[in-house]
Length: 85
View (cartoon, rainbow, N blue to C red):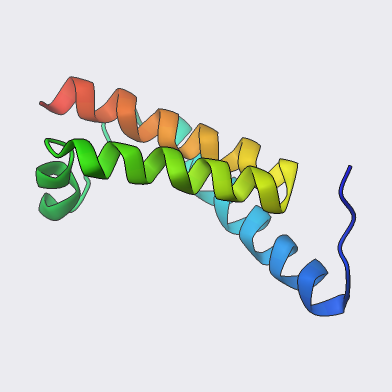
């Protein structure tokens, strides 16, 4: 695994991982999470979907754990958008 290169990198990774862990736990507890109307409207745009893939890729390049949790968050968002739209 790619270890943090310094104290700031390690702290940022921990903050992002804990934030995504909380977000994923919140998403997993409710099947239909109320998203802001802007996120629902963005779902129609293919550029938004490509941006989500890019965010997962960048997270995985930075830290595999961040990439995994980001991928789970995007997956929960996609599942909810399929049910809402």
